[in-house]
Structure formats: C-alpha cells, structure tokens
Image (cartoon, rainbow, N blue to C red; front, side, top):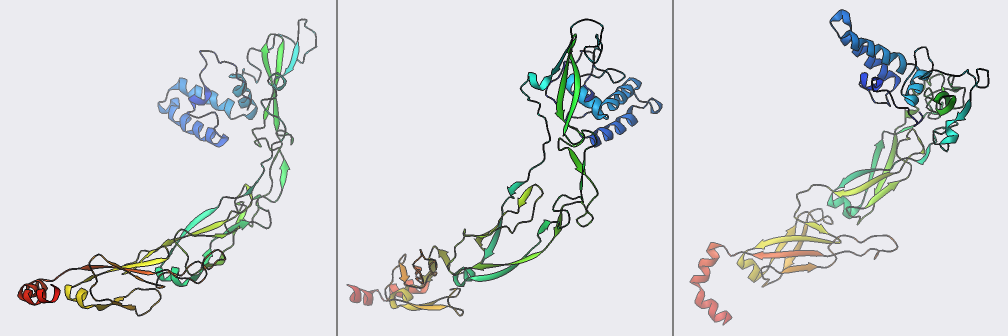
Length: 373
C-alpha cells in the first residue's frame, strides 16, 4: 500500500477500528471480524442498528481489494466506487469542460518511495545453524566415543523444489506486474496516480497454481538421516563438533544450516573429577594411616576398570596434595597438541584423628616424647 494518506473528516470513523483490526489485517481476518460483529450487532438479535450499519459499511470497503487500496491511500471511498470529493472536471483529462487539468504520477512526486514492479521473494543463501548439547561421561571424554544419532530431517520436495505447488500462474489482479495503480484526486483539477504493491499477490506478480500432493503443499518432506558423531579421546566439555548442512531445509533458504553438537559433562557421582588435563580426588586418613602410610583406591578412574590403587607415603600431612604423574586425562591428539601426553592425578589428603587415637596419644605420651623429642 502507498504511504500517502489523505486526512479523514472528523465525522468519518476508521473502518479498521470499527472491525477491531490493524491496517495490516488479512482478508481472512476481515471476513472473520465481520461475521462475528454482524452477529453481535444484528438488530433482530437485540443489537445496535447503527453499529450494524457501520460494520457492514466497513466490510463492504475493506473486503474489496480495489476499494480497500483506495481507502488506505485516501482515507475515504465515495459511494459508487468513485474518489473522495468527486471530479469537478471531466475525466479522463483533456476532454472539454474548461479549466486546468493535470495528471500526476505520485511516485514521481515522492521519489518513487511507494515502489513499483515485481518483487519476487528471494531465498537467502543458508539457513540458521542449530546447536544440540551432547552429554558425555568422564569415561567417554577419556577414551573417546562414537555415537550414531538419527536426525528427523526435512528436505525440499523433489517434485516442487520447495514451492509447495506444481506451477505458478500470473496474478489475475495485476496481470503479472506486481503493482496496482489507483487514481487519487489531490485537488481541484489535479489527479495523481498512486502505484503500490498488488494486495492479491503481495507484489510478486504471480500466484500458486495446482497444489503439490507429494509434500501436501508444505514444500518439504521427511527424510531421516543417521550421522556418526566421533568424540576423540581427551575432548573437553565445551568443544563443538560441526556437521555442515545437516539441519532441515527451510522455506526461504537455498541451503540448510549446520548442525552443531556442544559436548557437556553428564551428571555423575564419582570419586574423581576432571580439571583440564588433570584428574582430582581427595581422601580422609586416620592419624595412624598418615603416620605409617597406606594404600588407597580411586574407584572411578577412567583408565582403570577395577579402580586405580596407589601408595600414600609415610608421614603425609593434612592438606597436602599428592601429584601422580601421567594418571590424568589424555592430551589433545591434534597437530597442535602435545600428542599422546597425559595430565596428572592430584590427590588432596585430610587427616582426622579418631577418639581412640586421641586417647592412645594421651596414654603413650611419654613414649611419643621419647621418639619425637
């Protein structure tokens, strides 16, 4: 529609407001609003007769594409399909009656701001990417994993190539040019030609022909696909694995977007946690274990199915962290990584003396003093 509007008279109500609609309302929305309001305001059903007339008047104009375009441009439509204010001079121009007559193209006056010509919808080159989280266990991150995932993809129909129809036909309203022209009276003896997009075809100059039965007019059909996600050993949470063009085809785009898998840590109750390339665990020892040394097991170490057993040295202190070389996560295998190297296992020790140990210390205090002093 043109952006040029004549002011309505104070007595003339906005037809769109009468129907409770926006100016962008579709023909279907206008039809539904009219049916509902005419039922409510019908005089035979106790409605407001004056409002019933207004509703009918609004529907009469807005349901007619030509009258609606004239109303949108001028703010009014004269009874009988003419233009607001009538023509004080003969029409077409130059035909007797005297006076000064001018035929103006409103698009020339306003720098063609109202557009013109066919505006075909052009598909964008590539659709939107989609990201999916992929939860993995610590064992998966350590050893790597291959996962087969079935995608419920939709692809463009081979028959209609995404159009949803078997063919296109020229728009009957604008005859394929995508533009409607309307005469507007701009003043005594001056008429303007308003040029705006055709409302019947939205400026495309064409409309869909026979429906495509293969895709049920959707333009896309279901085509499931199985992909294999290869998680490399030593991968980290936050890594992204990209599968180009594996999203579904989308109407309005030439090619599908990429499918991205973001690796995340699964919820697990383990006695070992990952910190970069290192693994961290913690143990609580009794006083006697810390003094004499002992053995401990990391039950959930990903490199050892039955757990990893290690020695705690004699005299370890509370709060001390042991570093066991090479017992962490594998490093990246890419050309920029250390290639085959491993992180370390970090074990933090807490020492807590039991009540029996405390009593024993009191009992054998003299012996301990002889040993340590």
